[in-house]
Length: 349
Image 1 (tube, rainbow, N blue to C red):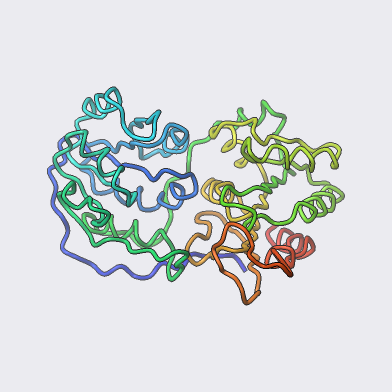
Image 2: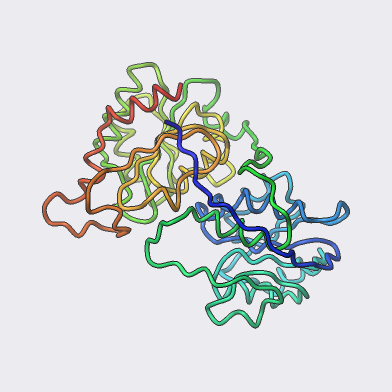
């Protein structure tokens, strides 16, 4: 059965009223997966703007290709460092936004927009930053690993403070240059992308030997296999690709724009609970995700049709980076078989 995120109903409220000047600046979240989970809320926020106003994004530099691919975003200001620089503040000033929307919950993200001199700033209170926001919602109090609702709910709730939300989680398709994938030989049909890594840690990573068995089985059925991941995962994918003649290994060899192109071309993706999972789903590419220590209630993929395989082990979700068990370590992951994943892939076709 295809996974659909459960987003609780958001009560209607009296809307904040803003003087938009030239538009709205969104301070993006800092991680790829988090940013992808905010896309439906960012799209809804853009709907609040008068026709002549622009929707702008301030984000870490590596996320620029993602936000530039959003057709409702008029300009992106990438931050080369952890926080905004004087030159980047000047770039924001030239856009003349009247309102800033702060998605992250950190003190530093609120300070970034505060330093830009934007008169109206909306975000969540907490973490000693309320004084920097002209319009506030209550703090998002997250216990470690709390998964009572999808993270998207909190961003939609924040946006609902100044625009009446439309039903559904859809947003305009991301703009992707498919020639970037063709430059790597990824073109035409029949491609399956495998993303065996996860930045969070090994408690998110399906066993390497399971990925290899699945890759061999899918290759025998005529699927063309491409491995994707970050530079930190390149050693892992190199081992897998070496044992699968004819496969292509792109881990650590693509920037975000190129990875988006590759995932958009593929027929399907198999991934852990990771940025690759969220990115493929946002691009409209279906797939299968394996969940170990984490919980799809809070961080399931948004966008395309995805099937989730979640262990029924009593110890999960523990939300730990490494398994604390001495006996049966990582059994929440190893207990999900390549045959189960292959069956889900077949049902997606």
